[in-house]
Length: 114
Length: 110
Image (cartoon, rainbow over the protein chains, first blue to last red):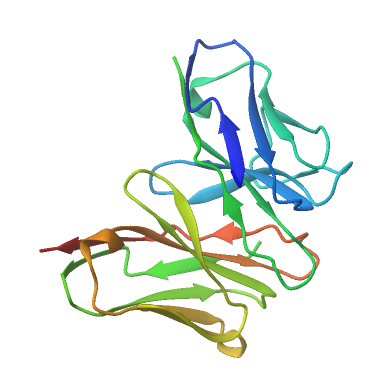
């Protein structure tokens, strides 16, 4: 049982380049999330998907797009990377039924934009 | 949006000591979770505790929803308890999304 798998683990981009961060979960969870973590600021929500076929903006969505490809996969795309997007990105999933609302996080992607 | 404040921001303990971490939030919540981020960056869910008290080994948590705070107790601390502890909350109608506090950095020394 792998839980939540994120790829890649590390990435360096040049300003203006694009990339997609991949996330997959094998727990049959309905909801998936993308957060970014910056020093001293905790985690901030970028986008989330409450269920397959839906996506919604979080606190800091500018510069990002997402795709809920199916129930397992939720990708985050940076169309034109900027140095302000240098951060650690975490994907998470949760169930919304049966009282099991706890989040499971992936191991993170450390992104540097130069 | 809802505000989440954690205290203290930093804490240094000797191995074997006990500690209490606090999380205050500014509005009613239907979801509250505690996480531990280890020194390698991995985030581990400790408790889902929108109200009441739960215990898991040396860790326990209490949420008093009517007074808008939660406490995380660590007893007989070990060096492996080091890392950052985050409180995160969600509100009704929020789609189970969480707002995180800025964390308590804990270091346990021998």
